[in-house]
Length: 478
Image (cartoon, rainbow, N blue to C red; front, top):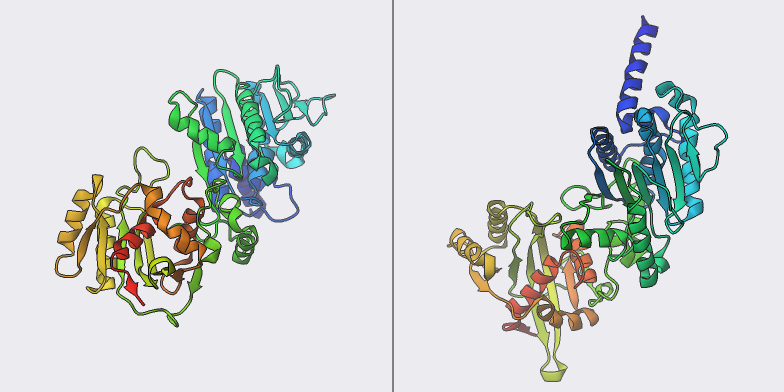
């Protein structure tokens, strides 16, 4: 009876492994250490399984996957997925093209994929799906009895005459030096375009999987082209930052301990937004020396002063025209000025920061809650121009009797408004109280200043400059 039950469970596991990539990886896991599943592992596997289902129905899939380094993306996308695709689609005679920045690297990955195919566990799932005899090169191998070919070549190698139903580009950039070279980025983009032309009819699966190094790399250019050219192929983004405020503090704690993330972030410094959080900082965008920000863990030495809070508004959690919508930021603090004329020195003291992505009713409820926590002594300054004139009126009415609400319209464009902050950052006169603000919010604030003006988001910069201008005319003279 026990044997029968075990056999039944094994048969069920095999059925799932034939149908689902995650179950396939559990069944065929080839590494000596345990197969550990994270939220990104599960999400990527589920999406790739659906891509195979769609391909068999004649529907193409284009995926742009961004994951931090050392998180198993190559195991999922390049080592496990090709054997799974070959097994499930063996009767379709599929062609596969695998590519990466280096010819030797992708051929090593190809050999690993082929080892999975010849493994006894794989053969229990897909008996007879074996590498063709006499064709054992890592750069090109076929399946016995199939017209399909697996090709593995570096991105900058020639792919003339090759085609693929499944195309995988796994890491197109080797290091920071290559990422910073415009010549290399241009050459890589041209190589990617040639790679993309290798898709076979009538349907294909195209996967670009990488840890992003630069805003202008292949991933960045794909995103830009999709925005600027409606005819450009529509790639679906799957992005898994190491830290995702409001969702998780650590992407893969099942495998990477929080200490590992903290140490990596400290070592990487300004490269952490790219390599850990999949959000590269533009070169030349470092207008603000965030390394000189002074952080306070207690109120010791914190000056007593009249504080205000400035709100930079965003109205929609899922804006229809943006895949990565903006945030509403509320930053509380004061501007202190010492001296006169040329000897004037300014210090910006930030005592609390809050941010959210919400539809207008939830956003307004959050603003009212924070304003009431601030108390009547902290004036609430709310941007009131363009689409936010009505929001100011609504919030003024909601806070009537509990908070003073001021209409705010800081001067000039974003860059002009932020300019006075540069000298304060450079002097090391920006102070942030960490006591009441969560680390993820402080990291977001810091990274937006680091990336400005070319980052994905500048809401925190807008809110901070709004705080400055709201207080500047009445800055406290010490």
